[in-house]
Image 1 (tube, rainbow, N blue to C red):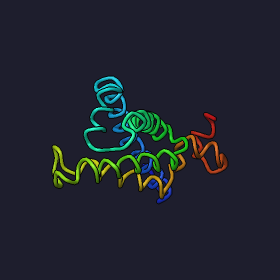
Image 2: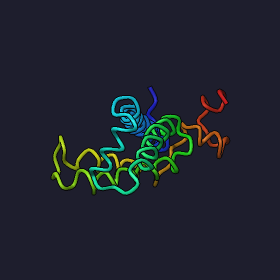
Image 3: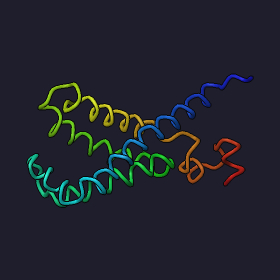
Length: 148
C-alpha cells in the first residue's frame, strides 16, 4: 500500500470538499425549484426585505443548482464558488444572523457553506476535475488523462 504524497492528498481533499459542498448546494437548489417553487421563494425573499425578490429568486435557484453541478464536476469551480459564496453571504447576514449562531435558524450552516465556498474559490478544484483537464491537461492525474 502506497502513501499518497502531499499533492495527491490535497487533490483528494479538494475532490471530497467539492463533492460535499456541491451536493449540498444542488440539493438545496432543487428544493427551492421543486418544493418551494418560484412563487414561494419570491415571497420569502420579499418578506426578508430583499430588493427585486423575483429576480433574486431566479438568480438564487440558478446559482445553487448550476453552482452545485459545477462543483460536483469541477468545472468553472472558482466562478461557481464565487457566486455561491456571495449567495451565502447574503443568506448569512440577512436571514440567519438575526437568529443567532445555532441551527435550526441560526447562522452556522449558511456561514459554513459560505466559508467552504470561499475555500474552493481560493484553492481551485484540484487536479481531479474537468477544470484541470480543460486548463492544464499535462498536470492531470494519469487516470483522468487516459479518460480524456
